[in-house]
Length: 166
Image (cartoon, helix red, strand yellow):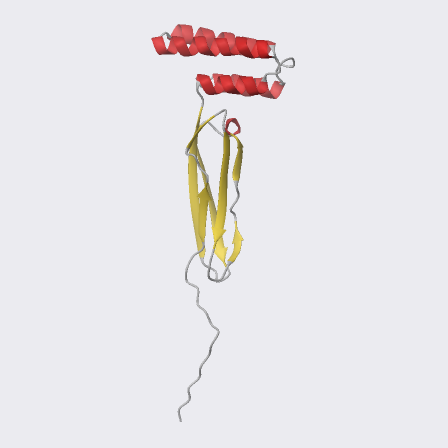
């Protein structure tokens, strides 16, 4: 005896889903905004679950240096895939000055703080480490004096922390 069976409508998915990050500039200064989109896709059986999350916010809210992110996805057939991205956040005198102007409610105070940052940058360009440190110390003192006035305590803390990295 012989028998032959035919079954139709069965699709076998052995392809893992993909996780893609888009919109990453790679390097951000603290005055910029990070906006990276995470997308999980599977064109065969579809995505069953994913840890994919968009990454966004003011660059100063991320760690200075390299920031790494990754996500995974599983399709309805049980295949797993993933992706990752990274970007660098850096602080410069100019970017910190821009942040001062975003935060500070008094243009006169912002100008005085910017002048300290400009003095620090000029001293650093001359190789004058003492002058740079003095100007940054004056910047931090003035930020502390403006806490609760032209700057909120949270803004002042951010500016002081970032100035320590210059």
